[in-house]
Length: 240
Image (cartoon, rainbow, N blue to C red; front, side, top):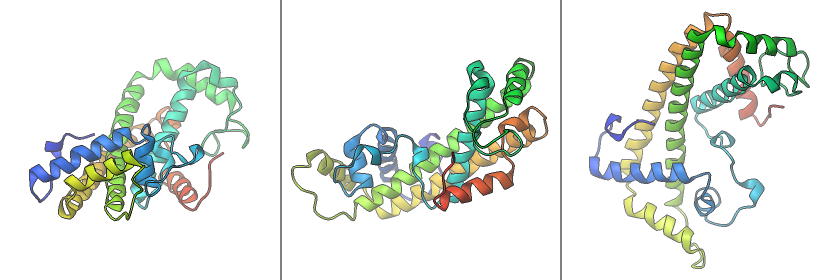
């Protein structure tokens, strides 16, 4: 996640930073603070446990590029786990997408997974690029998630009555109201998006290197595969 001084925006720096700091706090607390989830996701009312997000990857919004980064990270982490965990070679888990890499829908190609693991120590240059690729994807995802949380905070400013007994939910709305400014919201929304795209472009440079190596291609999806997976998810499909 970028330092505040790295963002470019038009507006009062002090007011924008105050809103940014609260957005960062709420983004960091989003997966662990149930009261915050109630406010941002359910009009301040309690949610069922199975409705609560376990990961930012569980949350989908209208930003296409965020979905692209999300599925790229999930896929990369899955294959990294296969490559570095010997126990995975015999596990019957399906690979997320890549056609030809698995034998059936019910499991992956065990021989190729063992090959992936055996070659890991001999491809340290690729491993370094994988680390940098993942760092840039993670930074992009963080920025998109800040944007997502900020948009949810905007929804909170439009909430009606919250029962008095929901004290912590009311406190959360009050904190948002104290720093809220429509122009600052617009400035931050654009700043987060531009920063995310910048990180995506850096990740794209590393993707290009990985795509030019036989071993690196195990860890990435083609643009067509990514497009297909994102389209499937955004249309309500799921990955088994």
